Image: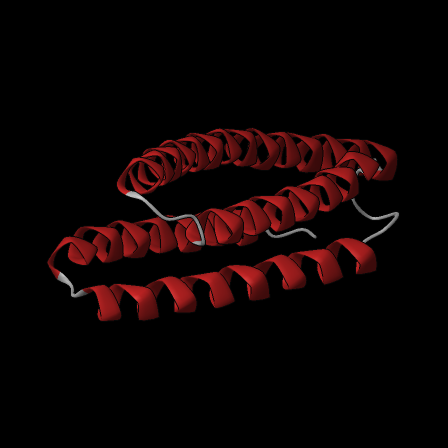
Length: 147
């Protein structure tokens, strides 16, 4: 991959998606419960589709990406499945105390997910810059070998 624009374009796409998420979550405050339930369902489906796409890409990229990324993808998928199962089990609990605890837990999970995403963006920036440096090194070696 010789083009340095591809990672930059991917980061721009990530930035745009983060802005969409911010807009949607702000708009959630003004929605009815039924509208928000539909949004939650759509977000879950989108998240699951993205996770599946990532799994497929990790499988197809074995030997082309660091083995650590395949491990991260696997453990991320396992984490998401467990978290979703926990959420579903808490939805069946009744009573105002349990509902309040569920809401607080969900809010803390949301904030942690955002922090995790922030850390992922930091790592993505590092990876892009490291890839740019590796490409420059490879070009220098290639130019030196041809001289």
